[in-house]
Length: 369
Image: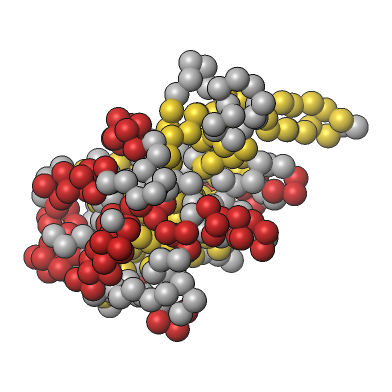
């Protein structure tokens, strides 16, 4: 079965024109197709939406946005949102919606789950405070802040600056036959990382300041990520004043009542050679398979990410010390391709399919980026 699935990986990449270089062959790394100008709706539908093929569009598609010149400056967006309260997500290490060590590994019921799915601590702060905390974020201090609300927040709590970008992406809206269900704003620094996951949306992701670095896998490579069931947890804040300084310590607590989240077990960027060896030993289908597709989205550029594509995201800040991005989520079409995907992931390859029943049950609740 493994041989057959590996052949599927290679064939699907070839059909998409993406190639299947080995992990060590960096010179032959797959590249996302790039367009110097936004495509016509027909070309976008035919060449990218229908086959499920990513597309990187140059800054020509956003040059008319006021945000393109205003948001990368040091003060504009802070001044525009000075009186606005926003939702800020706090983690100790910049990894929200990701796996973390189980806080009670020795307790009954936790021995089979040494890790858990950890969500950020969310607090409401005024926007200037949010920007100060984001710029000053550092895992060494135990707190990394990221504005990543994901609830149509650009048209909600950030409505004061929503007019600085297009309300939708015209060529995408016409091709997809709908307006976006949600438009989100993302603000972070280099310490915020998004773990491998997929979304049930066609995603147009636009970087306004800094850069976003994507690792991509097509849906056919589901088994490489070892999606398993993990108990849900969330960070809570413990606060105290020491020597006149206010300190925040984040502590992980299991959710009550308990909840199970299907999530990728793979960390593609381990922090040490020892961690890399452990990951490669535990998850050989990822580390011995074709290299992930790498794509850096620079300021002004937009990435079309088809629904169900797995993506891992890191970022680099712009001159203003921030990485700022906007994304447009369009509802995916649940068609026969979705049925094929569910069939594919039901196939067992060694121990890769542990937790797949839970994944099927919880699949529609995944909405992360």
